[in-house]
Image 1 (cartoon, helix red, strand yellow):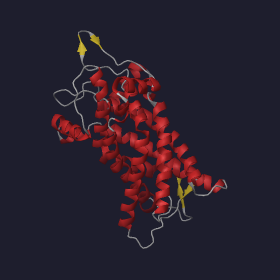
Image 2 (cartoon, helix red, strand yellow):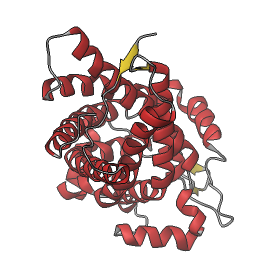
Image 3 (cartoon, one colour):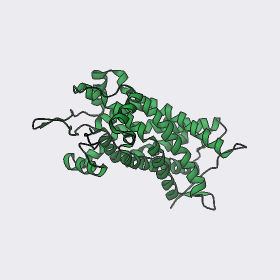
Image 4 (cartoon, helix red, strand yellow):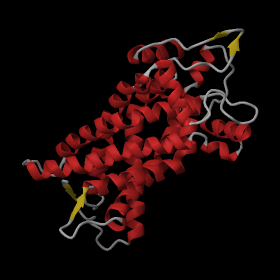
Length: 323
């Protein structure tokens, strides 16, 4: 199997803890820029994924469903029915999430890559180790960031609730945190964490591993140097692979987190992520698991491009070798 050759960090005289904190802050900054630019696509994706989902509330024998729209129709509908600014509804907890999630996953990946799993004696890093490191780092980062992801999904679906004539649940990120704790307790902040972590593991197996592999392959087999062109090409590959691997888990995650909750604290539509998966396929077909794939990929491509170019350049500017 082809191996990925990795570079060591240019640490100079800085301590390991200082280097980790610096990388954490740089990755959080790059993720904030990428998230702000591409957030409308994330909101569109979330709205698409809850289309076709049975509502928990019945009116007699009739069970209502959300109107079906495509990606562009959904985005236009949000602007026309709720206003342009609503395309960024929930961006604050999304940024909070990436401060935790991206900082953890990027720092953890490099630690696992360099210190835990280690490189081969010839300085190379096997692809299977890179994939393992990516999954471990993604799962760890997402577990800690899961409450902010829940808040983000809750806020993203508020506009749809208002249009359906339902009372608003939250207005701000802080209000959303308080609402969840009040209704479900502190542990409720981790509702849906299993599909969340599963998705993050798949995303990072696709994103970090593919970026690492593609970048080193480009440097080995072409005349391109370690610059923004190489970073852009590698990030394009990573975005496509990550979207393909993560969309089914993302659909399940969104539906589990968005479902109404009964008085006993249990979901009214799905018992577990597996139950959600099976019901979605049985009621809507296999390709329901790929609802929102286009906006996911369309978002991941510019997100990866913005993030990796920004992150690589500010690392270089800060005196740290590129990823």
